[in-house]
Image 1 (cartoon, helix red, strand yellow):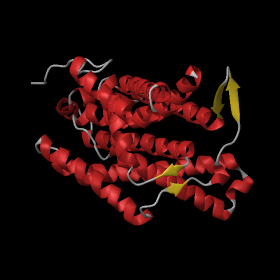
Image 2: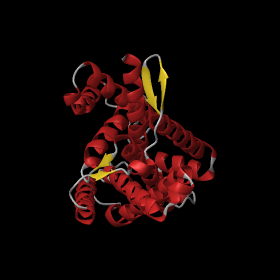
Image 3: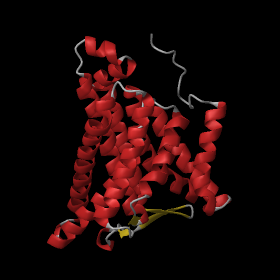
Length: 301
């Protein structure tokens, strides 16, 4: 029972971690919370189902299921990446030097706009993941059942998080992102195109959220237009838990939150699983406001 809940927690925690990375990267550079990020994740889930439905219509799964899944992920991340860039250009760039309250209102407004846009475009009813692409089979380890879908989700999440870590630490763009996060004005004076770096940050975060959306649609088999709100709040909680603005912290926070949610649902009550995330958020803000891996940083003068 315990091992089964740990596997379930690692699976959903991997998804939370991918979404939390988008929150923490944007906050690290712009010092703002992109509350519309959860809707990007939701759009990724819808795009995954739309792409798979199209591929089934043309008969691609009959040729190769693996190719179908790869193309589905590519379609989803291309669309969510485009939405992320557009979101930055429309909702945040014009308010770059505005009071933070104005940016916060803009973020919440875009979240509502995207929710209603998807509801009008796709309908208010839940969408079902096509059964033709559901991955069957499972592994049994000490009475714990690990489905191939869970293995795929965890493996892809680890791969993407490792790739992001390498990108941030080893590439010139990654170094520019770290410099911009440390001091955006000084980075601009040293020749870094900070606007371009901000766009890249939104792009990467949206790609990760889009991939997470496809994974969760495969895992639960159902999506709806308001799923981004709850997942976004939980991912934000994961980012705060690990230390907002800290990339390893977002990964750790997502995994821990997933484990806490799964163990709470398994040993306390599944009806209250959404309560655990908010309880953790309150406790972290009270006892460790900077998060597990966060550091208190003095204001730049």
